[in-house]
Image 1: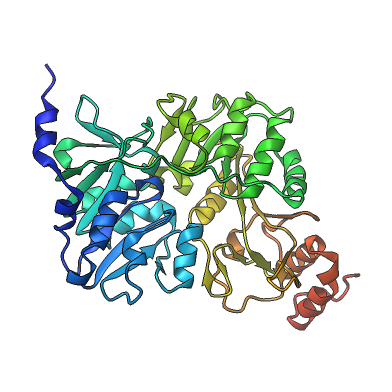
Image 2 (image 1 turned 135 degrees about the horizontal axis):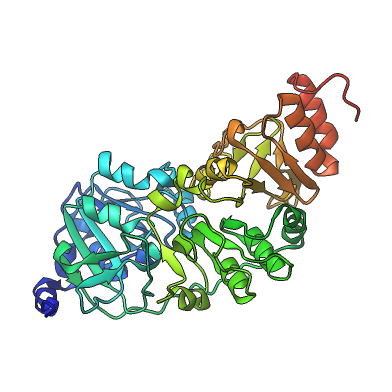
Length: 446
């Protein structure tokens, strides 16, 4: 006979206002990630602004609005932090309303276990099932390690959260929850179509010949991975796998084309593995109750020695700029934080160690500033930009002008290769800078 978990549920059920009253001045609060944002609790906590001081809140890849950040320009009452900025959180950083937390994703659980305080966690979950479990849904990558370390665990039941299957830690039981909050929620509004550009498609065409049947893919966020997903869907490749930090609509395209089977994976055979998911309503419909997919904590998904076990593992991520030494900046433009370290370094290391594995860092060769001035993404040296991936770990670098392999290459070989895939308008300048820095071989021909 099943226990009557509904009685325990009723005893722990409180209003958002009652739950928010548990927060004290000086507390550290966690909102976890993505769709895990506790909308009702955030709103209720923001209403307590004038009676609270120095409350610190953490989140990641959360869409707006975040009420506790918006309600306090002074940071005197609430200070918001993100360990991977969404486009909304980036704008908060620009306004001085969000502070970035450097974090390598495979260490996410360890940070919380050994170094961070969590006085209260507030996390959205799917409705409780008859066995007493709430599902962390697309928030599985980060939620469980945070809730384990929290002094007080509050779950906000969101009727729109898709229920997902996982490898482990995709659920929390009512016995592990201190308080439950219910209420009506707006449907998720994530129908933001990210259209690939002509340059995205050109880079994708150059990557495609490096892929083999049976390869397992990790695709980062953005238009370039979507372009590659579309191109693969139209190709002759088959029996592909998924092992990715982020499950996006690119993987849905592969599945719909019949390319994504996960049958050739060395581990988690038959399962598409992911940590979180961000995308369209159709994507959320696909991952819900899907036994062909498995959500895992990032401590598993992003662990380099796990990734390395998968033969023909291919990692594809984007960046902001590369200097002629091969250092990669993917999270900032100058000192302006625009995203986060995320899992790029995790997958660079893991895919490089995979049998037949490859790791690509992709970028357009140029960008235009707000005044319409063209700039090179291959630069002589960084000045204030945050280095996401060190030159010692960078493998393939791709632009619309070609792909180069940086593994084991000397400084002049790196400089020569990067100049060859830079925009032609900037190559002479880059050569002169390389000569000044004594990393251009004297016998090289222009």
